[in-house]
Length: 447
Ligand SMILES: [Zn+2]
Image 1 (cartoon, helix red, strand yellow):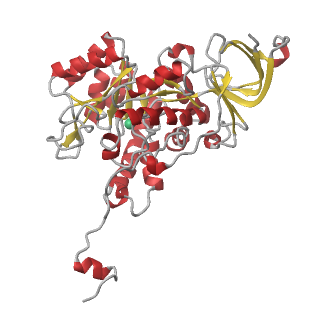
Image 2: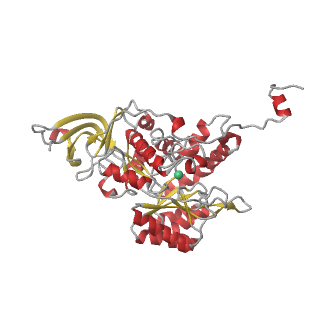
Image 3: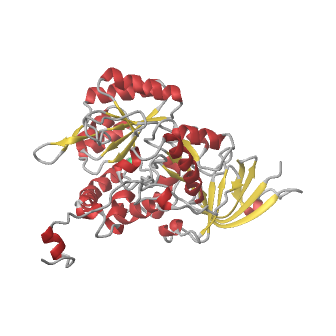
């Protein structure tokens, strides 16, 4: 097979924080065979292709994308209005948008049915384009977890994105079922719905329950990720040896110690609350209910403790929480790097390292991706301009010159879609209460 010779003006190979100038990568059969100075690189032979790139780096890894959610505007959108079959087709479609945004690998923590397993398998089989996927199934939830968001008399039917467990036996059985179905990771909703008088979130599971679930998942070869804003949730997750913790905005220094000891990767996923703060309009329920204000406070509280976590040496990865209306697929994946730089004072090189090298550790066969070295898969981005000068370049489609997955160029053209036929199937018709006085106030009626 003919080889691809990629000549880079600047190469960030993801093994560390440095860049090198005038390098050549030789890619054969999807795998990098050679990396070195262009002047000394083996010459192309007949049939080889040559490509030139300005700034070359590994493909992005987004460790927090929900393929099932479909750009949801509400929890009902996530769980009620669509079938698993429609969600799978929609997820497959949007996986292509994610890839076209430069995300060559993504972790899907929390799905319905076997959606991300099916998308992963069909991409791996070559049926459709898409990023590499670390698949999960329904989020393990109990009566106290945030994902049990409907009233208890509704519960969590089979087609919901949460698996409601009401005993330790149920939890272990659900983990065994998901492992049998072929998940790469188990997601646990660790934040509870109850709060202490001081406002602190009470963890949904006890420390012992958490440890038992994580042990069983690890025994069966699955990784474990948890949603955890609260101090107690982060602490129990860390003590149980969870692989990936999301958010951690309300943790304390003892949590940082515990995360360090466990070797847990932290993905604060600031994009979701930051987009909510920055983009919502006055009529959005996120504004009228005060949710956007909560997001703003959460970011304020979280920023100093996340900075201390970084200083302590906790590995950070990048997640976007894509799949909500405020984080549509293929749009905001690289914004997390900007937020690491802007809010947590990462250098741009540190942000690139988080979004490539560290993120790859959460992927199946992660040792074969995340860096550009001989023997690794040729998943890479070619950018016009350097994200080390301006990290926001990664969000500029005009600067994303090319995306390669396994040595092959990705189609960056995105098929347009009708957002109104994708999600937002709710039946809401009025957002106000039209009493006589309210209508008079609006000037629409007078006695
Ligand atoms: Zn999420």
